[in-house]
Length: 155
Image 1 (cartoon, helix red, strand yellow):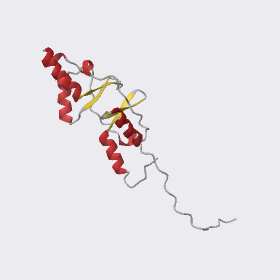
Image 2: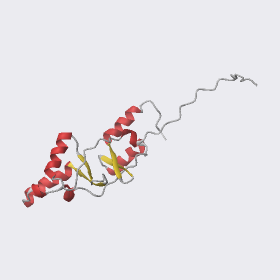
Image 3: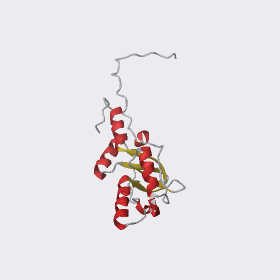
Image 4: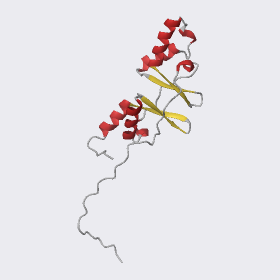
């Protein structure tokens, strides 16, 4: 029973199934991170050197402890002047924000966009099995949206 080649009515070309665009595909995994015992002055130096506005604070196991941002440093500068505290004693651990919202790497980028709007954060860390694996910023989301231009992403 040979193979019969059957060409009936040509089927309309199938619309390629929409591949969800995941946060993990657009996140930055090459991160500048900080440690709790680091000095605030060193943090400021790193932020400026790398052109970033904040970063994740991790322990030696790369577990996320908090986030330190330019704003936290500003508050420190202001407090130091006001309370006449030497900046040298100030560590990341004393200034970081420990109440951190994270995002799942398998979340759709468009859902991540909604989270950015709801929380007004500039970046979200992505944690997997307790370890920091990356972070996604508002700019990463914009980049993802541009990649999708022309694709249909309503749903």
